[in-house]
Image (cartoon, rainbow, N blue to C red; front, side):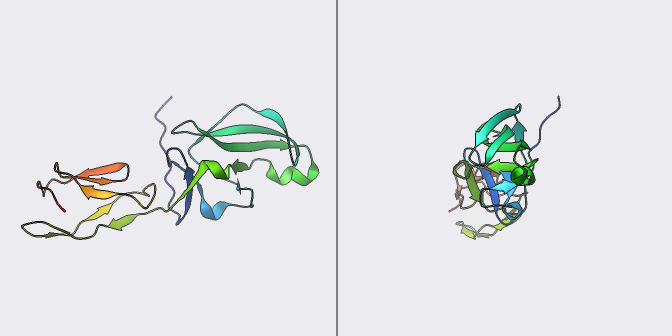
Length: 160
């Protein structure tokens, strides 16, 4: 089996795994108050099991975050009640296991002042996990942006 790559969503709001912040679903794709979705990403699906739920009997599969393996919801394979057939093939994400995040394609870092000159840097990355995030320079000139870090090659001193 080859490498598994995560999909990064670019919506303004994204549902992510509460544990590891991996993108799971686009906020705009929600189709019911119960967090029902047509599509989710970055998941693994378990074997089907039959469950009795408040809405009747269903055959479902647990879905887990591909990154941290935490169960985040389930997929409906079959609904026995005719009024519940619309759920077949759709996904439920458990609200308490989700983190709503904002995607960013570009973030303008505020100006940092050094003893020699002003520094204004723009960091570009694909759909960062979440904001707010911490941004700060360490003495080794590494800029930390949430889980990511960018090595500052031009400015070796502590910036602040």
